[in-house]
Length: 398
Ligand code: PMP
Image (tube, protein in one colour):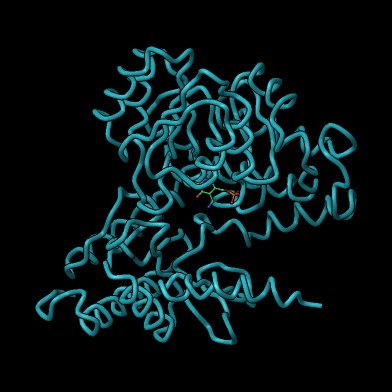
């Protein structure tokens, strides 16, 4: 039975969300989200998934998961420190450590929980965490749970970071935490410069490589490989380019031993299923040999960005699969996204508070599996709708 008083109170709060144009609803996908998907009974091209290398629906991952599913059953039925630890968890952790070129790695149930686990357990009272202004919500939540102070520096602004580091003598330990690739702006963190600053100010570096793992660097090892540096702690997810589910931390053996004993989001969660570990294990084997796919992905990214800029759009970010196209006004961005859906394209509008006021956008993500024909359709739809809604001028080129 619904509690009428509670519903009235919550409806009042939801009305405010609706008034500000920020009310969100679920959309049901009736097929695996590769480059095409059936949403609400209609075929749509998906330009919004994190399935960057097309691995989420790769037969090799399905086969690996299926085999172990029959052997180990569905759920792991226990936390890692009780009965949830299997040889597949161990194999995957060894694989991740080898892939990230660290001594050890530790699995979490999600990237979100990995970030929260590290930031809530590692920095202590009297320490300080320098956090990029656009870091992911899970980093923000981890900092909120930490007993250390948090100081926000302007997005990828190394001058601002250095000034803040200079001013931090009163703290015992310093940590710098950054996304490798920023999820809303598609920017690559200047990890080489962050490492240089960290070394001169005696700070530890934590990088969340959720969107870079499998994508950046010659072998897809992420931002560390892209810049040729070794941050102290690398956090990642198995749910984006890896195509599975779960999160991880990679670093020294001592760090992993510490997290296993102190990170509450590790200790008090049920282990991810062994079948998912087997799928992720298969994914890392594929990723290591996916140079051609990464090259193809990069060429798709460049093609889309160049064409949109030629049309007159403001496109943010570096060359990553996250392509934010600025629309500006919140209502216009929502109207743009629904017109895209009418043209058979699913790419959501991202609005405040996720992004700054006046910076509402269509956040496109591209995968190596998008065909040239699908990209042509995306670009011609942007041309059509952009003119219709006065986002780009009549004179804009296609
Ligand atoms: N970090 C970043 C930068 C992300 O974009 C995300 C996912 N949106 C996460 C962490 C969380 O990863 P997961 O989905 O595995 O919880």
